[in-house]
Amino acid sequence: MSVLDILINYHMAFLQGLRVTLELCAVIWTSGIVLGVLLGVTSAHFPNSWGHFTHAMSFAFSAIPTLVVLFWLHYPAQAVFNVVIDPFYTASLTLSLVNIFAVGEIVRQAVSDFPKQYIIAGQVCGLSRQDLVTKIQLPILFRQLLPGLMVLQVGMLHATLFASLISVEEIFRVSQRINSTIYRPVEIYTALAFFFLLVCLPINLTAAYLKKRYTRDMSER
Amino acid sequence: MLEARNLNFSYGDKPILKNVSLQVPPGGITVLIGPSGTGKTTLLRCLALLEPPQSGSISIDHETFTYPWPAGKAFTPPWPKLTTVFQQLFLWPHMTLRENILLPVRRRKGGDIHGELNALIEAFDMKDFIDSYPNEASLGQRQRVALARALMLEPRYLLLDEITSALDVEQIAKILTYLKGLRGKNIGIFIITHLLGFAKHAADQVVFMANGEVAESGSPDILKNPQTERLYQFLSVIAAAS
Image 1: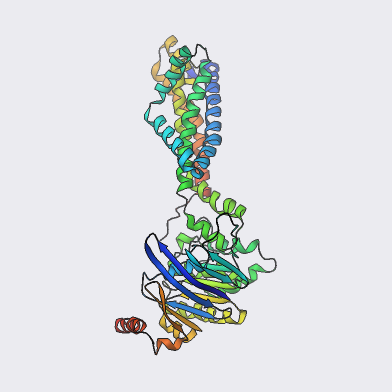
Image 2: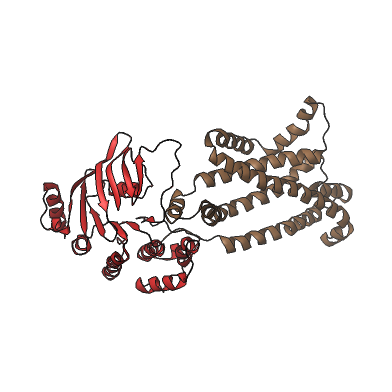
């Protein structure tokens, strides 16, 4: 059975798994970008309270393996609180938290380190507060943040594989189940790689487009 | 009149400005000279209302800013009526040089801003690089753009910090001639420079600072006949070096 045969015969199962993976990503990416940016901006403006909190949480989530957090929230936490939560929600929450604090820390650092002289130059030129934010600060920050955030989001897509370990029926778990039935690991994982390429290609193309459109080497001669 | 009275400024325990007073009249060129590290740029930043001195006052025409500034009192500097070109220029890196000039002026002026810009492009020889980004231009080119950005705003007072340091002799002559021409527009210019030749020929007033104090000030004649030992020493060192 070739890779093509597997894709044809099991395409419904793969697509179902891919749908779950993309649903997970939609939750993780949306919450991470929206809440992470809010958290980062708030942390930059309140460095002694929110700033320390974001830094500490980001450090904790980068130090503790995501799988450990995922398992902890799935097994012991639910046992302690005597609740049963759909693993999809547990995975969504865990990976969203990781993403929110990672995005928050990247944004916090970028906003905190923003060169104040560009703002001062705008002030003495009489730019309004709104123009300073929309014409100077946001475009420069966007260009600085874009590459790092895109890489992080692709990393979060890959991290959705962990969800398979708590029984979320995402594409990796589907692949494992197919493999347990027909035992063709090389072909099956090649097909899985194909699906990840399919998802990552548009992301990478979008990242490349945005990078070409908005980022450039701004270092002076 | 842009006027500073008894400005005192210190970083921690280190005094930078000691009881500095000076006047920058509209339609005149005031040149500030002095050794490095003597507080010239700090004075310019205070005059630009970017750095609050510990005490003293700054008047811009009929508006007076008295320091220490009362906590909670609204602070609304008259930018860009009073504007500054910094030594480090601070052009916005994500915009072309043309956009750098046009952004501040677009919201403030109607009329033919492109015509005014074209006249400056011509005057400062900027045609070949005006659509480049700041990192694609040389320091001298960026200095001309930063000056053009300020001039497009038609300020009443223009503070310039060493803006000709990277220009060649021909460009310096062009820009200084242009600055002299601004007298006719009643713009008051305050310029920090090491170009004593410019101070001699174009300045209406020369201020010499040493150790955070105005050691001597007056007409450009003080550069020929210094009245203080400190200015005499300063001029002697420069004469020996050149």
